[in-house]
Amino acid sequence: MIVAVLFTVGQFYAQPGRKVDSEIEKLVPKDLLGWTAPAKDSVYSAANLHEYIDGASEIYRALNVRRVVARRYIKQGFPQITADIFKMKTPADAFGAYHHDTRDGAEVQVGRESEFDSASLAFWKDRYVVYVTAATAPEPVRTAILTIGEAIANAITGDGDPPSLLDLLPDEGLLPGDTRYFHNHFLLNLYYYVSDKNLLNLDSDSEGILARYKTPEGPPMTCLIIRYPAPAAARAARSDFLHAYLPDAGPDDVAKTENGRWTGVRRSDRLLCVVFDAPAKADAVQVMEKIAGPGGTTK
Amino acid sequence: MIYGHKPITRRDFLKRGAAGVTLAGAAATFPSIAYGDEPARATVVLVRDPAVLGTDRAVNPEAVNRLLDMGVCELTGKPDPASAWAQFIKPEDTVGVKSNTWPALPTPPEVETVIVSKVTGAGVPADKVAVEDRGAKANPVFQDSTAIINVRPMRSHHWAGVGSCIKNFMPFSDDCPSLHPNFCENLGQLWELPIVKGKTRLNILVMLTPLFHSKGPHNFDAKYTWDYAGFLLGTDPVAVDTIGLSIIQAKRKQVFQEDAPLPITPHHIRLAAEKFHLGIADTDRIDVKMLGTAEHRLI
Image 1 (tube, each protein chain N blue to C red):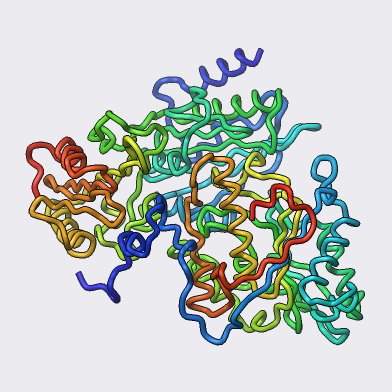
Image 2 (cartoon, each protein chain N blue to C red; image 1 turned 135 degrees about the horizontal axis):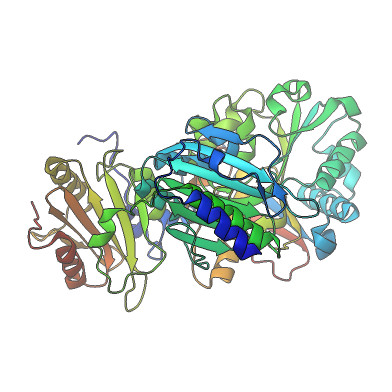
């Protein structure tokens, strides 16, 4: 029966050509498997999201959150299920919000990427990142969470693409579930502390990804790829970063840092690649050349 | 590019010997510097008893009463609870008990009730004591208060690193988002607000079921809590938070099987000492007195 419900909801809301309502919650049933949402949905903007999730709002604000809808499903004798639908500016931002948390739970095939961990379903699709959560999730709560999540996913007609910068990452040694997306240096510092100052000149017009790579021993190697609006901005960022962070770098823009590891920077057009904590100089250079390509430059 | 001061980079931390830093600088692990007129040392009392938690984590009021009495006696050196509580609260005081109502992990009502009983037991009329969280700023008792008891649970936090005693004064701010920049670095500033400045007589960090890891927009998953069954008490909120943080870090290391610092360094604790001279964050200068169950104490 559960499968039938999922199928029915999915069929209805995934009709090709169906117009996407800007208020997506109107497309999600308020009565699913006996769970109902009698109360009015709570709606937040970037400006007042802190009223709902306190300081965590800053993460979503840094990723261009536009609108948040919180709906509470209840059923007598069972824990409440909360559905939080975050509408972001772009699919890449939705990807970034989803991957703010390390994803090591089970993939459950909802939306573009999903995870069911403990009593919470999280997924992203198109410009949306969605969380459906209960305090505990024994059956039938788990099924209800999945059903609500499916209904929301099916109301989102687009798929959206993850950040195209991901395509530039070398596969070898890449640690799964640990890739981040950011615009500003506050979020970057959260994932990998670089400096209290914005050495890489990041702002809302830049976008970056951070990935980690397995090393033979010790901490992983960290790789940043940042795309700036124009080559001049990337060139300036490279120069500022070298001046403040790698004043001891040689002509190849690579230096050994105080932990015995290697850090380097390379630019290609409007892309900047920075490698931190490479086990050897050759490792840093190799990764940067793979990313920046033959056109990569130390200028 | 011109910076207001020389940038502080990851490499500066590495130079200071923190070769194991993997995320966000873990700045709270570095020795604190430059104190003003703070006392040379601080004392924090840890008191624990598994009996404080019953079936389904029901809080045992009798055990709470006993543990808090033990804690204040140890903290003050007084032989009996009445004289110990009298060190903090006088009959002529008007007392605000700053609690925390975060739905997932609030200050347990049993703890609030015990504290109020101690305040009235010290001779304060019932109408001169109030328990509040978000409404504290508007509460007439808090507005007229001469003394505050600060009590809340310990938890990891998406943006501040941890939510503990220092952060618990957030509702006294007229502009909470203004305190969010750089991972809430200026939370110590809250303690200079006229409504609270110089009034806090006792800080109680509830360590009954602390949250040691945050995931999702609401930060909470019960699987990242554990039965620690204790309280931390002290007059210095920075010292109390510092010890609470060390327990959280130890739990993370135990669970994640590696040195897994909080994704966000709760540097507001260190900065509360260094910038706002609110107390002591240097563990070498904090005397921790431990009472009760030693098993799984983590410090």
